[in-house]
Length: 212
Image (cartoon, rainbow, N blue to C red; front, side):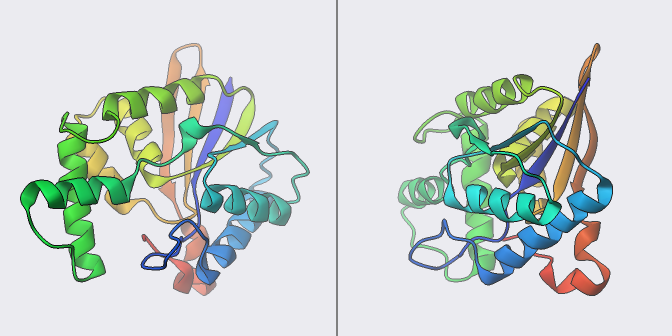
């Protein structure tokens, strides 16, 4: 049996010139995440992340805080979809201007993601994105921690639950930064045991709870 902890990266730098950088809040989220893994006694045999800086940095900080002395391997199949590219493609198709606020950006992203999941034109297909993540999940062995992104987690959970494509949009919207999702694989296949656990951002750490 294998146990895989799918972990969303800490908060990135929304609105900055380089989105793919952990914000100060993201750094602290990664530390608290590592402390949570330590408190649970998680002792992984493998550690993985995508190749994106926010994923790799979350892995480095969290593993150190967890006291896990394990090299973190990278695999681009754990990378997020190109959310900015999807939004730009959607805006160009709709012949409209960019969103003026984070709330408006989320609405546009939801619409763009819904179109993509349902086969709309964009750079790269959703089917390929999901298949890559599913194959990466299947190749993990023993207990593993995987530092990835909300879209990957939403796609995998939707497939594990047998939900339609629209569920990817709904799940993607609520994945918390540095939250934990647990998947167990045994003789009967892969099973989603928990989704989006973020109790480590309640109580004294409630100010660290972010979605974007």
